[in-house]
Length: 92
Image (cartoon, rainbow, N blue to C red; front, side, top):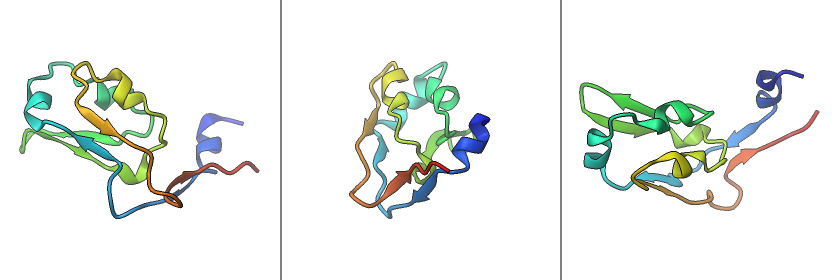
């Protein structure tokens, strides 16, 4: 089974409160490589050139924690989603 097919089995129950937060937008502006944009397997992070800020689409997060590990400035506050929310992996 291909990875895309396996990921299609994942169910997301979005919360109204984000479990991901950018601590300092200014830090992101000065980050040259912005590794969170390329390292996140769910492409949760997006850079908006017009507003010069990063947006976070937390609803599709796979909860792998890679973003907090790859950020060279430790600029991402990451927590588990509240109980009953987030990703639910199903096998089938």
